[in-house]
Length: 341
Image (cartoon, rainbow, N blue to C red; front, top):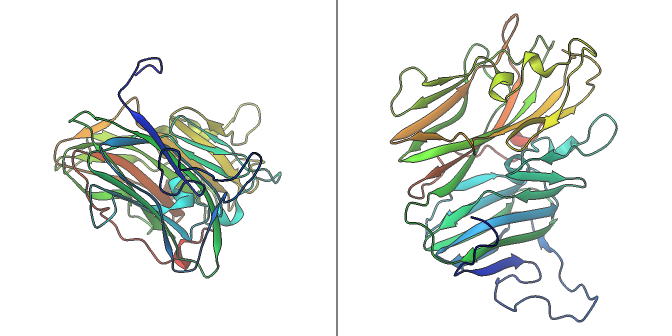
């Protein structure tokens, strides 16, 4: 809806300065005083960042400070006891390699898309629209061994949402490594009416890089025995071609970050195609081409190279909407199991 269209809505924002999100509830300091810009979360502690009654919509989330895998982001809709969003904060924003998130020149890669923005210096921004009818509760758990600091701003509005509005969901999965010869499951167990909205992928190449992107992406809709959507290769699913390489002129990978798709970072040397032990960070948002389903949905990706099946490390976050809130259909691995190397 155009920004100039007048609405019967009230804006809210939760932050360390305004933890209740109340109107006029921000800092009690004077001009140029910074009283509470962040919070500390102790080991084993879960902090409530946002708890508000509906109807309304979350429109923007911003995080910085510690943004590693030990921080677990959870979102609960309409008094659900189990979360509909559950993922390490780093993987949720497409940065699963949080322990070593810098390119070969020591710079932070920038993810510059319509739905997620990772700005230099690890400014994490989410623009997925998240409508809710009764309640929204957002928490952050520290599963690590040390106290960590979080800066945050969660903003949105209160007001009527269309009855047909779906609820936002997101779930994390990993296989380190993928079992050779078997497809990697991006997401399974989604039940109900909804639409698949996209995914992020972090791939850590193991062994010789014999064009790791030959694996096909496959989507199964409403009881499919064989996929309804079948992409010809991993780079093709992420809207690239020929291994993301600039074969003719440079014979090297070339990163890109678009509104809805990208391979925005290569960690390790990208001086030539098919180098060993490279790490790739990719995303695709199905904003302009949602994948609709009536009853169920699942997605897999083959891990395949020119010379046959591979055993690379895959980490993904899947995003989707459902007509009713549901708990995530997959359990998180342990904190140390999530470390991406």
